[in-house]
Length: 224
Length: 224
DNA sequence: TCAATTTTTTATCAACTATTCACACATAAA
DNA sequence: TTTATGTGTGAATAGTTGATAAAAAATTGA
Image (cartoon, rainbow over all chains, first blue to last red):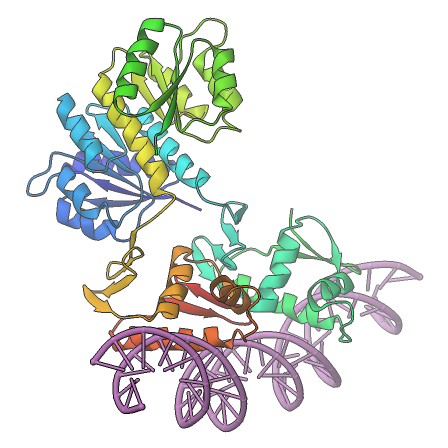
């Protein structure tokens, strides 16, 4: 899933430059041009914050102090100051990195990536991404198409889970039925067909392509 | 608890300098003077590694590549190289920071501290803010909505704690019951349902939105 | 092209699950 | 003990989902 970055700087030029760079590199970007705005936007819990220190009214260090208790994500300071004591100060208020202006944008990008990589390593992964747009989170039992949540009922999600975790593999209707209803269930496997229909309907409603393919005379499979 | 740092550099002077500095600052220090030794010591799972890039035989990048899969701790590169591409390379092989020689030892210390702080933060959270208005303080076992304290009884808070610390993740009623009442408890997991109802009632009374969602046929989850 | 077969759609109703409520019991404070 | 508060139970109600059958559409093979 796309990472969300909050960029805070009072110079619109820099904000614009960074926004373009990160959007091109497939991040979702929020921006703020002063401390107060930054605090408001930070409450949306972005995945990472790039924070300029020199700003009128409330400076970056101040902002960091105020949000640190609630906002656990990495905070990278951006600054023209070169005094060593400033840097150390930056780390002390809870910052995670400190980059001097003028900076290389590629280095900034690499540092951002390194911090996010570390965050992800620290949590268990339960999500799988299919073809760029579809994300299935098995722990959350949630399906997202282009970051939009698509609701699936219990049995519907169960089927999606079974098929998507074995993408490409063909399941005949009896196998799906037995897998989810249990062997001794008496019912007819035509229920499966009905659920597949409902699943497809929801994908259409969400504007998505279809991920479940019919294998004529056999059953269904998750596209590969 | 004392953190263990592994310092790797082929220049004994630098190793000595860093070792003294970090030992004075209450770290436990391991050292290595070449790549092979570094890999051996890294297997002891230090809390952080400072790794020189320019070394004979096996350079720091090489070392990092080899250990990255097994050693999850932060790795800080230390180097005289100033080429931007080298830096980015350092991040790509799995490094977490990149410091140029000559470096300020206090800045290095601050960066080390920042990385370790982050590792720890990822383990225990004491307070979390949800969507701007709701604050849960796990140490205090308190819940605040718009700075107003909402009282929750023991079991109620236990449930809130379990769900909110794993926001987005779906828990079925048995899992909640076993998690909070214990496996051998005989009771019915329908108590959980009753507590959820009471929690919701208190959120309504406080004028708050609901944070616990029902997942039909499965259980409950904290909103994401 | 047509008939046989398989899949998809539609509509309906039964079965299931969650919520609510009233009350009983347990525990801690006064 | 009395009182208040927290916790657990079961039954009634409301709401959602799942199963079924029958009709429509699509696919296949001759």
